[in-house]
Image 1 (tube, rainbow, N blue to C red):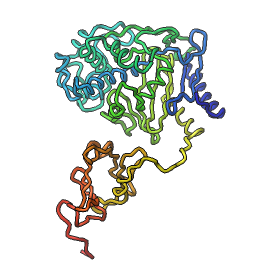
Image 2 (image 1 turned 30 degrees about the vertical axis):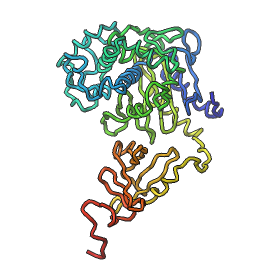
Image 3 (image 1 turned 180 degrees about the horizontal axis):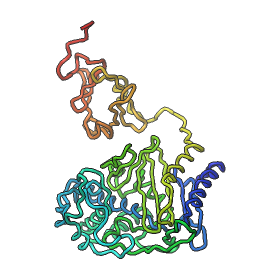
Image 4 (image 1 turned 45 degrees about the vertical axis):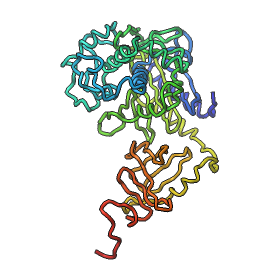
Length: 452
């Protein structure tokens, strides 16, 4: 484990200790990940009379949903389903049969948050047939089906979708396709010692109550998994794009893209494809929170900074909402990244140099640069505007990876001598000078003139 400065460790430990003490958390373990390595981890409180360790299991609640989402995306990448497919194509007979698989993943199907019957998190669960039979018209909320509405039921449905298409229980598929390849040996459907006991803390007295840990049955894909800090480090790396052979990093990037927005007074949180999203002080965080009776967990990855934060606690409620981001703030404050020394690149495609520099979309100046990773970057030369990165294709064109031009094709126009004269970006013509007359600008160019 990479060691932080003693002053940084003390600041982090104090924040951890304040969280555990002031909120009366029976046990709490938290840590930070940078560049794929645990750089700090510590715990307060005890499990079975001992301090919690990185191998102690806690229930991770809705972080379970991220594993189910990965299983669905694997099916998509194999061509077994399309995210635009209707639920009726696979699980017919529910009141949301006309909703898409993608809408279930992005929490925008309009399906009720909880299943019919008793509080599912504290009672034994039924089977899939019972769950699906309960999704009648009363389970569809008035929220428009394209709007954000968090649904635990939706992930119970997605777990059954995986089971049907794979011909095995979803958790067995998860073990085979995710946990085993990534070496996550301590992530399980049921607790395996050493594990914390789920506890509720009395609001007005220092006493605790044991919470039940029932098998949720068909609702287990919504929040039943148990895991350890060490396994969650692996999962932070996965969410950040270090996916091994389980998923292509581009698929995880797709999962991190907003699919629906929790539209409050300010856009701070949303949902991708099975991943929660948070915007915080310039950071774009992806991961998930987790809550089950007796347990709270958080896992957030900042792919841009290759940083992550994890905590797990055995308490039903009472944790502050800023604990995770406070730890990230302390790291940034005490030990910000020191940039690597710049050196000229050894593998720049020199043929691309003629494309770099100033281009104009009409009168608006843009700059095209070659990134260290070989991608092209097109962005306004000043101020805000449409900016995108582009990846080369074998036919000489480029495909946008993000921003307004995501998925769009960039073509380079050349004169008879092969010199670049313009860029055609999905009908938008960029020229070397503002509205260059020799370029195929739509509507033609009459030329610049003085006055009116």
